[in-house]
Image (cartoon, rainbow, N blue to C red; front, top):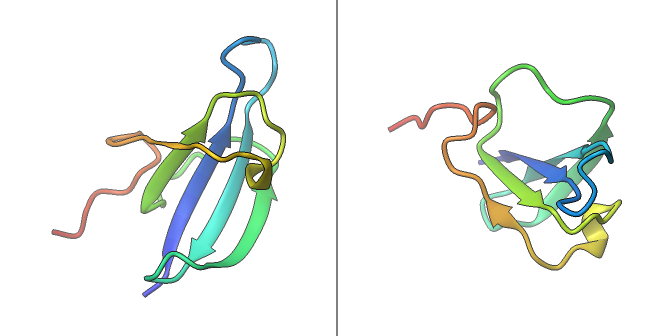
Length: 80
């Protein structure tokens, strides 16, 4: 089973810096199968998980700490 994860890279110290968005495809164990940066914020709620780093990093591979965002508008409803 594949999961789609949206990673949001923002800067809490400089709110004028634009946020970056990266989409990850992962398998059930959490191994990253594919990644690609997005040009703009997605408009459709199609992600299984939303992760955010607000340290001002420019790539997700340079980050070592993420916060999981529950009930984010871009997170699709659970399939309960």
